[in-house]
Image 1 (cartoon, rainbow, N blue to C red):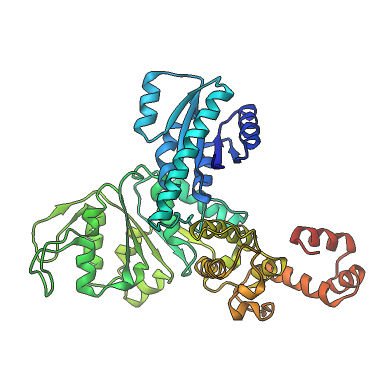
Image 2 (image 1 turned 30 degrees about the horizontal axis):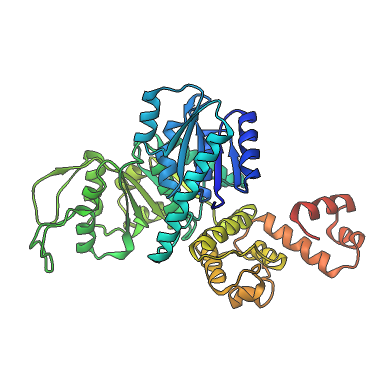
Length: 446
């Protein structure tokens, strides 16, 4: 029987523990959470084969988890468990995409039957993927979890705004995960079962941009050999993400403003007004207020888009998230490349913590993917990093775009490397030995 990666979702500690012990005794890997939000975050963070979801999670329903979990974690099999069984509930669970249904109290034999069935399905799917050369679905680079207060506030605001219909403006450097956050907002919204579309504003000329956004009719311009409905029409009922909106051509901006305000637009070459129910999320890596002052971006559009602004910190400002993100990406690329790389060497983890990551999450993702492709199954060492990272430890200079925490950590590491005793290092740092000992432990410095 294929060993499964199982997620247990139940607000009763005894049930979580009992299920975890049973599944682990059969060789499966288990993660247990006690809430709706925890389950959603785990489904985005990791790839699971099976989820056992309690029907009642405090004031929320486990049924409402089925669709978003299936969307966030492709291929997952969801089994709803409950002490309040009814035919209607079972039917509703199956309609939403659940694979099976268990009534409390269930027996070991029933659990064995469920896991054997899911194991068989997973084995068939993996064989099919292998035969058809289909890579495993990579896990998103950014899950709704962070150890950094700034990022926690970002995720909390995203969760709060998701339920509304208001436009959202995501502000952050290139590569900080704006697209992933926009997708997360969509998945947490009431539009999650409808399309999510993306337009990269710098990628199109004026004429092509308008056509990509609103569509065109045949003969509207050279090359328009047939009608095109456009992204707005394709995202009906869902969400359209406009990436790097600061690069939107000025001539298109009033048309977008009209659509946001009136839900009305026209295709290129056509004068028939059309309606569409689409939520707009926009993102930028520039200061739009400055663009407004310079006259390159409409002030009224800026204020219409900026109903709620969410700022994404750079990866250098999230030092405590770097290693967890790297480990998550490693698991994802392991699955995509059929590898079993066990982790990173201590030296690589130290470099990851010290490096300023000018390309943010996108750069980290590229580094991990490259290392996985070039590696065997041994831990990833310095030799598999790009030359500018691996030749020697990256030395941060005063004024580099990094947080005080990163500067403090690297300074402590350097002083410890260059002194012969903890007492000498503490004297140089101007702290007592007990404080330095605690900081070493917190930073994982040996």
